[in-house]
Amino acid sequence: GQNIDQPTEMTATEGAIVQINCTYQTSGFNGLFWYQQHAGEAPTFLSYNVLDGLEEKGRFSSFLSRSKGYSYLLLKELQMKDSASYLCAVLPNDYKLSFGAGTTVTVRA
Amino acid sequence: DAGITQSPRHKVTETGTPVTLRCHQTENHRYMYWYRQDPGHGLRLIHYSYGVKDTDKGEVSDGYSVSRSKTEDFLLTLESATSSQTSVYFCAIRLHGLAETNEQFFGPGTRLTVL
Image (cartoon, rainbow over all chains, first blue to last red; front, side, top):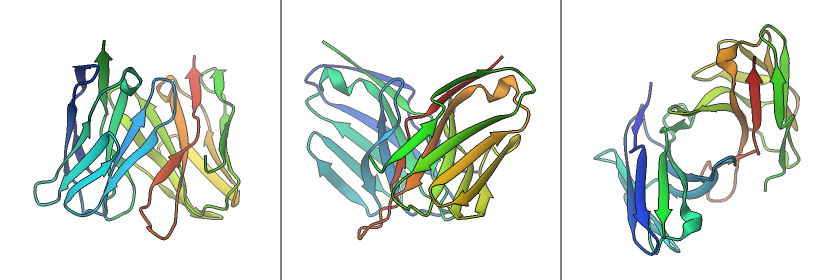
């Protein structure tokens, strides 16, 4: 099976920066995804990394190191609406997307 | 929104009864998936389909069956529901495009409670 680890919970202050780490051990690698999921809603796509390096998209950035089996999602200028669960997911050789358990981020005023 | 709907959105049923959940898409996507989401486990793949009448098992397929008789509909059936199948069920489709990121887009979910 696949192994994807991310912290369970993180708390940060409005306006601050939070970094959510994800480590993975999978059978092959065809890309890493980050999804955002608000309570009671469906996951929504945030980012995709397949090559090493940083992908920036507005206040959110995602980094990948394939050799280390490591990724992080960086959320800048935190807003209250960023309070959500963030899911790391890896696409292995069988193309069956495998998810971590998710990191719940709480933004406090 | 990739045109995905799920029905029903909420269901309460009793142990031992059959249950069918429906996922419907309007954009002719080839790949469709069924996941369940439980606290502490994240999303886990139940079954997926790569075309009409073409399906395969995922990580947690025991107790579930699926059918896809036409491109737009992917049905998930619990032949005899158990309390351990109480969960939130999400359907997803895989988006294809020039970038071919293999991004999956999720339906709104079905909350199933088995008493």
